[in-house]
Image (cartoon, rainbow, N blue to C red; front, side, top):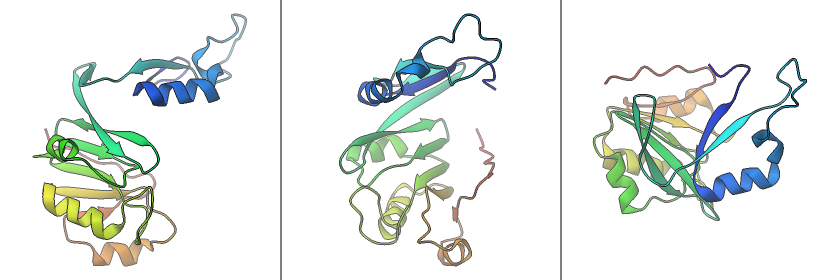
Length: 167
């Protein structure tokens, strides 16, 4: 846990620049006389390709978020991709063979910045993970209704969810 200290933040150069422009204070040390942590403290790491944190290999996955880009990440047998409306062939390639895929599914209709349920289910069928978890769900979805209509290996995420991942 990163309590009372710096949090490592990994993002592409454009995202880090945007955060630094809007929230410059999070990259600056606290006042030397501070006795408690009074603000977030981020240590920026520019992601330009695969990298390692401790003993974990991480592969960034470029995503199209409509008017901007975002990064998904693959951690061995787990992939996490959110804020995505379209994926390039290279992004699908990075997901090949993944066991658990956490993917955003914000709406059930065409949207400019988020893939709709129909498209996300097509992606899941293409990648064929053992388990897919839909996250970034909006109020357009009723949890129980959505859960009942999904294939058995696909489930909606929920607040506080813990995901166990095999090797």
